[in-house]
Image (cartoon, rainbow, N blue to C red):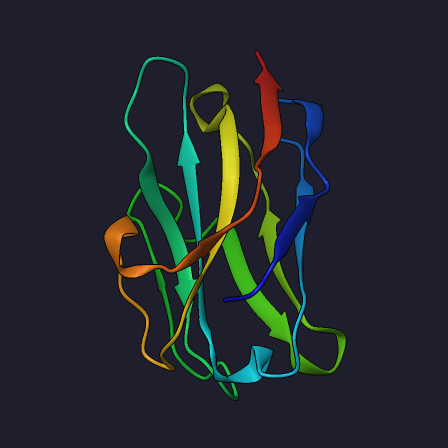
Length: 125
């Protein structure tokens, strides 16, 4: 398993941007598919975005964030990013990154082996 640490959350106004980072330990980071999930207060954890392992050539987004969020990875830095633009109040949640011991991602939280501690994103109206 890898250890994951998220950063970059905070308070932003509607329409603003944030970039979340997720730093991973270990020398095999490039072989892991990575995902971002979020959990709003009183709601279940939901899929946000995912990126394939190795080159990260394949990505996938939840409909609610498509066109506004971008997931990317830097294998040299063992880091995955989530660029969030045009933020809305409904994006308010704790955001988690997750690692899956496969180069192929999944949108199911059950398919990920390691999780970070989460970072709070709050979008004010």
